[in-house]
Length: 137
Ligand code: ZN
Image (tube, rainbow, N blue to C red; front, side, top):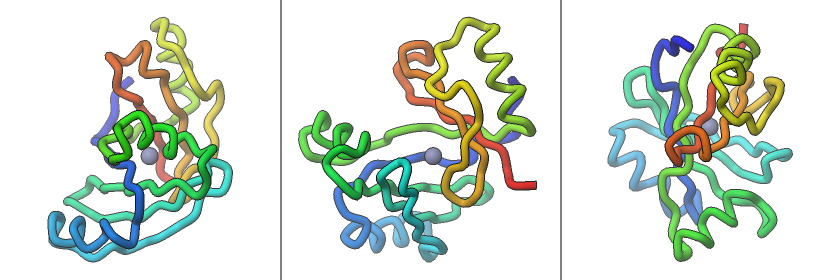
């Protein structure tokens, strides 16, 4: 796998509304997009730091994996995943599988911002939930 850069850092938060002002301060940039991703049961908010983004993730229901993550973190949010940008997610997935990594997604699916995304299991990525993503063509 040869990612071009870190596409974004995913950070779980209990409330977008109460954390957006802090991240606008931290990144020195306005939140430029708020989007609900229904199949992941999250609402996302994006900020730019150079070519890397910060993706805030707020759960939309208690069954959301983000809600469970926050619960495990003692009710606080925290860094949830790191996303690497690649040219082709499907090919990168094949490479990861061949290297013996455990895949959460066997095939790319659509994520926020129309990216094609796939997750690798933290069990095989040093405990860091890892996303690989591809820009919309
Ligand atoms: Zn992400």
